[in-house]
Structure formats: C-alpha cells, structure tokens
Amino acid sequence: MYIWRKLTDKQRQDVLEYRRLQRFPKHSPPHFDTEDSARFLITAACYEHKHIIGTSPARMTECETEILKICDEYAENIYGWCFLPNHYHILLRTRLIKELRKALGKFHGKSSFKWNGEDNARGRQVWHNCFERKMRSARHYFATLNYVLHNPVRHGYTVRWQDWPWSNATEYLESVGREKAIEIWDEYPILDYGDKWDIY
Image (cartoon, rainbow, N blue to C red; front, side, top):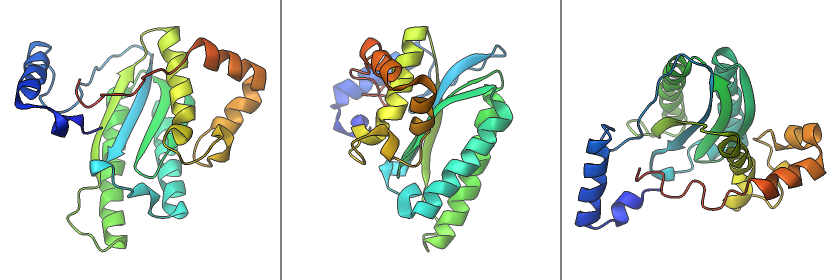
C-alpha cells in the first residue's frame, strides 16, 4: 500500500481526476451503501502499516475477538477472516453495511485510545482507514476468500494457512476438505489481488 507516495505529480493528478469523475472521495476508498443483502470484503489497516495490532498475541486476540463480535451482530454470515499485526480482512454477508461500518469505527476509536495508553503513545494515529468491497460475482467471491485465507502466507508470517492462529483457515479446511480447498485455489487464483488498492 501507500503507492501514492511513489507516484509522480502527473500520476497523482491523473488519479485525482479519475476519482473526481467517479465522484469518489479524493484520498479514501468510496463506500457503497445498499439495503440489499450482499457479500463484502471489509479491510482496515493501521496507519502507515505499523504493527500496532501485533504488539502482543493478547492484543491480536483482543482485536480479533472484538471485531468478530461486532460482525456477528451485523452480518448474516462470516465466510473468512484474517488478522495480521497491521491490518485485517473479513469476508461476510450483510444488509447492514452502513451500521457495520459505524460500529467498526467506534471500535477503532476505543481501541486507539486504549492501545495508545498501553503503549504510552497518546496522540498516535492507530487506524488509517476501513473500507468495503462488494463482491461482484462468484468468481470474485472465491478469489477473495482465497486471498483472505492466504494473507498470512503472502506476508511471510507462516508457510501454511492453518498455522496462523488469527484466521478461520483451519475451520475452513475442515469444512470443505483439503481436496476441495485445492480445487477452489486452482480455479479462483488470487493473481495480483490486493495490489494498488490505495490508488483506486
């Protein structure tokens, strides 16, 4: 992320013009509110991708527990999740996306205050942003599920999905079976999924 800092002035102008034409906010992902039930990937990151969530295993577990509790309240289904030291992803279905965003925002505010107190870092910005991506198709959904569960491997924290304790990879593999999981992985590859999200 943070590709913006590496862009030339001309590239930045092009990006901002594109966002203006699409009526997107200048520097943050757009939100697409809907009253229909839909599947979304929820993503939030620590400011400048600092490892604030991952200060300790206890904090990782606290973050996972509290956010999943919020998602349980507003989501019809939670399909996949992964919490890393500096960001998290949750794939879910909800018709209350606006309410869910608001509840996550409250958690981000409370956790910022608490963690800054614990770390003797008052005034530090903890969270950068929280945004949702609506799943456009079954292919998009399965590629996203693979992306979420593969995230600890992608970032070098582990070599196997099920070795990362802050995700539902173990439960997923137990529910679909190893052969089916491999079939889904092969049929719906992640390719360059997740690259350049902070541009568009």
